Length: 290
Image 1 (cartoon, rainbow, N blue to C red):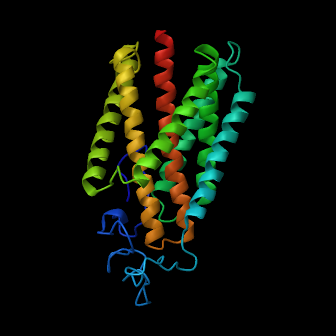
Image 2: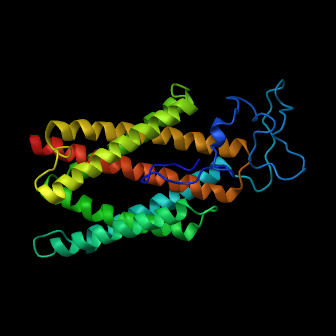
Image 3: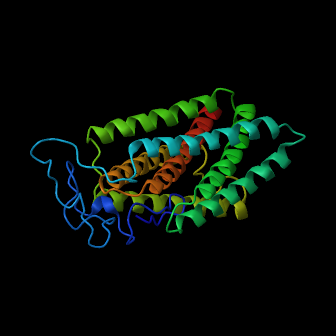
C-alpha cells in the first residue's frame, strides 16, 4: 500500500502499489494462488496452495522471509531511537524563558527534517534503515522539546499520562485486531483514508487562519472543538494501527523479504508518534480547562 495520507504515507508490502492485505488473502491459512506479490518468476511458491489446510500444521517459512521477531526488533530499535532523541532534547534544550525561542526553533527544524526524511523513505522502493533511524532521531528531538514545554507550563503529569494513553491505545487495538473485533477490509481502508484526509485538510485550514488571522484560527485546537478533534485524531491513529497490523500480518503470510520489517517499524513508529501528539494535545486542553 502506498498511502495517500502525507502524514502516514509509506510503502507497504506490495510491488505493484497495491495493498497485499486486500488481494483476497484468507483470514486463516496461506494466501490464495496468484495473490502473492512476492512470487518470483517460475520458482515454486510455497504459498500458492496450503498443504497444511487439513492438518492444522503451520505453513512453511521461506528462508530470509520477514518474521514477527524481525518486526518487533526493528520497531524496538526505531522507537528506542525516538525515546533517546527525546530524552537528550529534554535534557539539553531547556524551555525556560531564556532558552525557549532557541529550543522551539531547533524543535521546529527537527520536525521539518523528520518530515522530509519520512517523505524520502515513503517514495523509495526499498527501506533504508539509516533514513528510518535518522527520521526517528529528529522526531525524538521534536517530541522531547514539546513534551518538556508541556510538562513545564501545563503540568508535569501530562506527559506521562500521554505516554500511558498511547500504550493503552496500542494494546487495545492489538487485542481488538487479534480477536478479529476489527476487520481490515478495502472498505475500512477507504473510509480511514478519506476521514484522515478530511481531518488533515481541516487542520491545515485552521493553521492558515491562525497564521493570517491570529488567535486559534477556527478553534480546532482549544476548547470544546479542540477536545472533539483530539478524540477524532486519536481514533484515526487507532485505525491506522489496525492498518499497520494488517500490513505486518500479510507481509509475513506472503513471505515478504526480511528487510521489509524496517517498513513495518517505520509505519508503526509514525502512527504511534501521531497518537502520542494527539493524546498530548487533548490532555493539555483538558488540564488547561481544570
